[in-house]
Length: 459
Ligand code: AMP
Ligand code: ZN
View 1 (tube, rainbow, N blue to C red):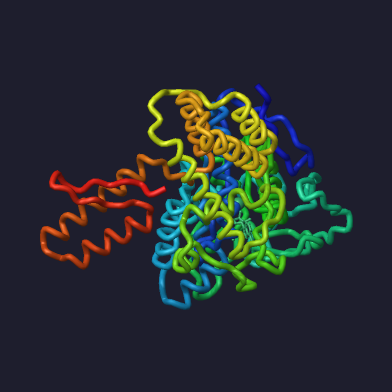
View 2 (cartoon, rainbow, N blue to C red):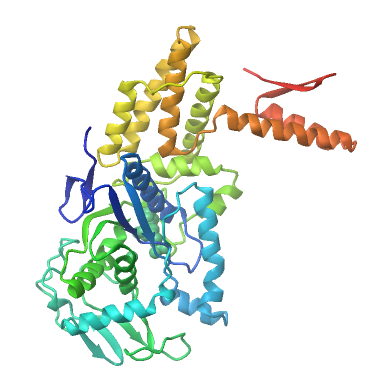
């Protein structure tokens, strides 16, 4: 079997993937900052991680994935204070919304979703270890990481830190790439801000320390995979390495994976700050289906290429998904069990094992669909071949998770017919007729006979 190969940001190379413990992958994915709804740029990254997780599982690995929820951070503290709410009161609505959006997009759940505010103690202990190892100093009640004490600083982002200004420090969570500075591990309390009483003094954690503390707590001191969007490479992931390795002296992560950004139509990164974003909710309100959104973000480009978001992208996704649905319907009524044809399955699997090249895999799938449709039209396909094609579609859908197979459609139709019957029983003929029209729009024609309602698919 071709091995799984993944691009590692640390080496800049595509490497064969081998987990530390045979058969088990431990992976940490940076999660949302719950100060607002996540936008579809964020979900592009979360869908890339869903793809990674599904491919790993299909390779036979057990996956333990941790995704943190950043629920204490500059913007959260500010917004909660403005509304007179505690952090928990303020973040609750966005945490709920995040999980709803995950379900809408059929993103598989991680094993753990730890929240920063629930791990203050672990963060404080980690900072104490860093202090014992000589990596910290205190200024104005805050504790900082002295990056000059960690010679490998800059290795992930491939930064030249030779011109480093010793002692120059920064309190905000995000800062410029060309200016690496000592960052806050623990921030002294400010008036009006929620804070914690700890041996480090009253205050709250900086952003970066949560990921080191929670990843190592749930996954051990060396992780197989750490993933996120490219904007996290510096400073966030660079700082995570300095914190984790500075405390343990062990390698923190074996494979660093980063997804490129979703951009707006002009090529700008989609972001809250630029106000050029859409949420999943916005797109649903505009009438796009969850399946089209998932398909567009997942297959629109390879994860290491930027993807420009546009209505055309969503429309193309919508019609691609419909073509796959139609293919499933055409194959319908498969009665024999079968394996996917070896050649197409191999091409599909190999593309995914080649650094998760889903766009290539999807290209092969559509070639197959096209060729097979020709065989179906000319009446050449045998029942066994049809069953094989159906098996391939199901195989692909374990990754894509967008196809509606006929039996799912059947049960939807049966449900609507029952609803229509109930409407007729209470003599609500307008409602009954509306359901008939809806079914017609789905390509289903009803026929009321003395034995009940029959239905057939219009071709
Ligand atoms: P945040 O909620 O801002 O902490 O981001 C959550 C995840 O979304 C991180 O992995 C970011 O790297 C990622 N992200 C942020 N903006 C974009 C974007 N425009 N395209 C793709 N991923 C993004
Ligand atoms: Zn993180």
